[in-house]
Length: 375
Image 1 (cartoon, rainbow, N blue to C red):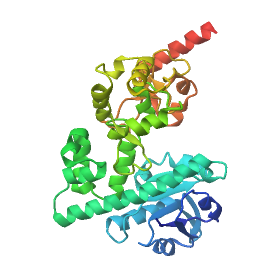
Image 2 (image 1 turned 90 degrees about the vertical axis):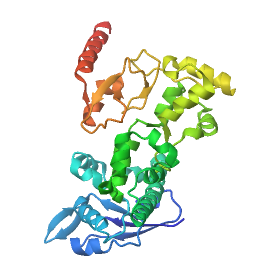
Image 3 (image 1 turned 45 degrees about the vertical axis):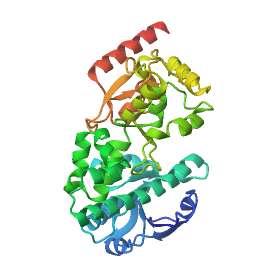
């Protein structure tokens, strides 16, 4: 498969692009000159746009930001003057950090990359970038086709649109997707390609809820996902409830309700949350003739009825001794956000814009004081 990408950057980025581990990637570099000329070079022939955050192009000697160009591109896409396509914003780490505080721009792009990820030493990050490119291009194709079909038939969306987006049969999708999510995506005013993409990425796929990531799946199974048999177990027994919808090539997720049904139907009549990690793993090993290792307690934690993962350090957590954090961006269908003791102690939650709940702030201070007294 061939992927045509346009990159707007004031530097020679050929080495970085060459490090994206993706066959068939063709790119054209647009060196900033002026706003009008630059934007006119971005045409329908491209599948994806990569935009630098801080451009050295000049308009009357005044530098302009990549997000300014992106805003105009999104307007043209919404007005059908340019075919809708994914946009990735990239820059050096310092510039990306400053961008993260500009919340109004976040829904304009589908991904944010640090250029450091594409250095020769970052093999795993380079593979992830390649996977994300493929997922975004294929995802936008799915969104565009789905919206075009709805408009052509004047069907108004609903079950068929949601079925295509979530990769589920129309008869099942409404029972799995929360009504608020269903209503949002079924609304014609929201059926604009980058609106659909932004909502799915930022409100559904990035956080646990009715879909869960691999870390949380392993926690709910009580299994250490770093053990030697995890990949085999996952690919042999857990595919029946894996998410296969929009952007699933990059966002590997599983349906939380179907996981629970699978456990009760295929594994044990005992609800998994009432079992310790060791008990769940023992049941799985006996049931499937495996030798999975159980998930281990994270540092400074004592409870092992795991059900969540730290949203920062990705370690399995029991809600009883995890710490709740709040965010103005959390949606009603998303699970509560939890962090581990060490992440709080290092103030990692504050760096990412989270705040401890009042009760857990008091609890953390009390536990920290006890630890200091016992040291």
